[in-house]
Length: 492
Image (cartoon, rainbow, N blue to C red; front, side, top):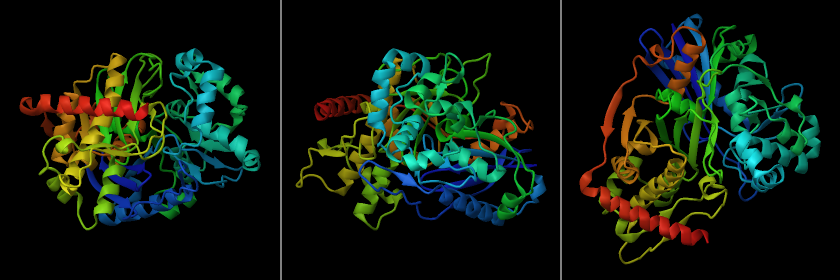
């Protein structure tokens, strides 16, 4: 018996096939080989064509089944993870009306900030646990204000994962966790927030029907099955945003547990059992995948937009070099890169900076002392310092993070990055042989009723544990403190 998981990213789509009897991922595939395009029609905008996500789902599935041929009738469920906070608008015929406004688009910051003041900061934080900020609801309001002809044609709005689920099943639906990530959810009343919709003049009918995170969410249509070479009627049984799903993938489900990822963006995500918030909404609270009526399980998320994208930008600038070679070269530079400081805030509005868009900055660059090795180290350390800056905010919410789990991927493949993270944040890092697509497949197995929350993680292994190094810990602390001092001056 098998389950498929899809991870719909902004760079690529990954598919994974899980043998549910052994708990082992037997195959995976990623498409396209090069990163999917992000369209930037104006400064601080970021859009993608939803149809391209579906095209890459089809391509990734074909690659997956080629690598591991399996009888489609043995695939008993499908799980979906997806890039959070995007907005997809479709008409009554389920046709996309405009490109998706994705997570790193900053056009709605002003709309959300105004709503925060007009609705009242106390109301928003007490009920939404967030400022409306740059989230999906504010992006929809932007469409209402700036593209009224398109707004009038909208039949349903959805998140990127909801769109893929619709392409699979023909049904428009969403989850409570998804509604919370769009700031549509009232945590106290446990329903769609009527006040925000009223303020934005948004018809609640535009929201899709709610389905459980784990459980039946529709079945594969004959047309979708034929396109994917899967069996008609295969159920979709799990759906979550990429960061709640990343935490789930790492078995981070209980209060005090935390997960981290460092792909295009970087995230630390900690599970909390309270409806708590940061007064400045610099970190955000969403409904976690295993929240239920009896047990409050929220995910407190800090996000650094400029993470892997900063490292990939540098790679492209340097030229003919691989990421492992970059990691090796960076390690030849001393801790602190001889005073070179990088502030990787060049990928849209940064929530940890109160939705400011300061752009990326390099400080103390000396042409006589610094070469590309220093720059490579400074970029990795700057990313770590940005993540730790967000973790400091989480500490103020009484989230005492001492241990984090991560997949053995992306920036965590760099020994330097791991060392810098462990020593700056003073945490133990556990690396596992999993990823978002495999996690989505495990979620599908739970949703189909084949395994429970404990059994779902059979077959997952801890590959290594990285602990703070007493010989360099204090040095990292001092360098980080200097970085924060410079950041505060930059933001004045």
